[in-house]
Image (cartoon, rainbow over all chains, first blue to last red; front, side):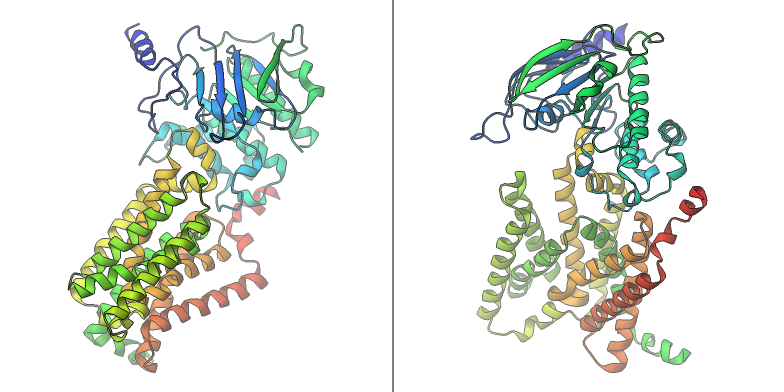
Length: 273
Length: 284
């Protein structure tokens, strides 16, 4: 009880201001989710890449409750990737407020996993699949600490779940597109994130990998996690998502709540947050 | 044969040269792994060249040359980092501007000193003239560079392979880049005594590039890079002793020949694929 109130007091000090404090890497400064607050809350967001440029996002407001799977839809240049990067703390907004689990961006980065488009990684770097997935644990380790037994267990479990444990020692430059995507998703699982921000994860993937990714995301939301996916795959919207956010020209055009979807929700648990 | 191998190292100056060059070799080649993986070879070359004005100022004022070079290298490294921050200028453009400007300043200062001869050992190195105090300086630099690299290796690797994920979890890629530039400057200053301003980059880039042909594991690259560097330094010292050629030139040439040999052998033997032995077993 005492801990909860201190968490709320600490987070209120920064109350999701657009002037973000600097949150350190590692465990120090991480805040727990505030009970009852949505996973994502965005108000009047304004993002520009440079001062002279047209805003990439303007006056965007949206809310994503915990435990939901939400699609971010729009044509190229609509602002989907920019929104995801802003939520991940990679871009600082010029105006507006963002709260993740009731806390400022960065205070929850141990609970947020951002999966960029695959081209954003240096796939020629000499590490194995296992080592790349292990980087998902770094947010919990911080400076100077080496992975311990439980970190290895999380990684092994994630590799098995994505069906890539047999290629754990394979160098990442030898992976196919589908294996690369599974590896990145395994890293997000190993990170034990509550919120997945995925930038077009199903692009150019075979049907088998799409199904696996779908299953893993479904399990994640059933366990109380939240998923926000930028996607062009309109065919799967009603089948796979709880709501759809339509974006156009940097604005949130409309938000559609999909009722009566065919997802397996029977076993869903109460969201953690 | 044994006496041929032992004879050079019966001289004190050769013992000191061996110790100095091996220390410099291990330091530069370890850092070189990141220089190669982050495609910073040009930056390393630029920092090495821009130490010249620092060296000349230190020489003219009778200060310790190492400190002069160090200040110039760090100023350059941070200057390039500052100019190219937020990608206002591309990094290679910033390097081109600072590198040529600083090297030109060095040349003007050398001409002002009216003697190129005094500075030839800075330009081309002379590891045979390493003194005990130089060795102490090189040792300190090596400990600092290798210690830093060991301490932040996990984070350095992450910011190289996936800078976006690193930023997402709160790591400042910019600060790590500055740190890398500073230890790069330190390693280069240590290398100047061995092979000189002009060829220091070779001590970083060539062993690491050869290592990248042998293995696709990061740890493996560090080990192979150090081994190749130590071998090159030894071969270079023998060549310098028996053939009476420039020690710096001989070391860099030995390094280049080893690279060529490894390039040819790995091309025909397919060594690299064997560096992850578990793959074939698990996939079979």
